Length: 354
Image 1 (cartoon, rainbow, N blue to C red):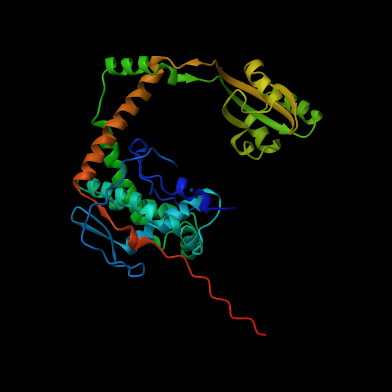
Image 2 (image 1 turned 30 degrees about the horizontal axis):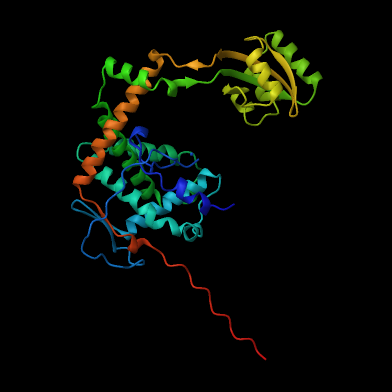
């Protein structure tokens, strides 16, 4: 697996305002790409210490705040962990070298997030008791402190204090972004005008909401159908008998699918069969007993359903512009040369002996 190929798309997202949470949202032990934001400018500034080793070296200045290499390294470590955790793998120290080419680009995102956090702290104070309760809840899932510390390490946190600090930043920034977005409201005429101008973007495909039980043979499928006819609980039967590991634990629920998402026979039953009646379908995976609970025809999303989405989009865009302006007032300066790690030089081979 080439993790580095995913680095620039997964690691460099930035905090999108519409998401109402920063990219640094911590994952509690046991848990992309947002919209692009305006880049952090790097105006001429006094030279920063050109060190990639000293934790006190300055990597950025934001308003009156100085950001050190040690702080950047801590956040970069957690960002790398988010990437590899998202691929189902634990964080390992050796991965930091593999992701090192992304450090300078990640600094742009990090400075922006630190600027947002600086703005957020003005009016949003963290609830210490609530933070302690979140940490305690996460700790409760582990038998010992050592096991908890190991799980934190696999998610890029050096210790419990690191984890708590990440929770604090998340809470403060989320509250700030939520409040910011609520400041911008739009009347019915604006929403209606936006809908009419962008009607084509509100098309929606047909959907079928489906649950199924997958078994190896037709005889087993017939037995499941008989159980259902006798009043058996679909979810319980799915948990006990379904061979689909992705849905069995959810009682066989596949959620709502679009036409073409599944193999042909399953797709036909989902979009052409009766509602709320068990159907038996054979595919290359086995025999499915499926029930379609709801079906929505393809078409254009009505204005009544589109309006909340439009208001959210417009408010997000307006708030993002406001946030960009506030960050610009802080005149952030970044020094990528400080975070750049030189590639290791391969040792010179010893001359061969005659």
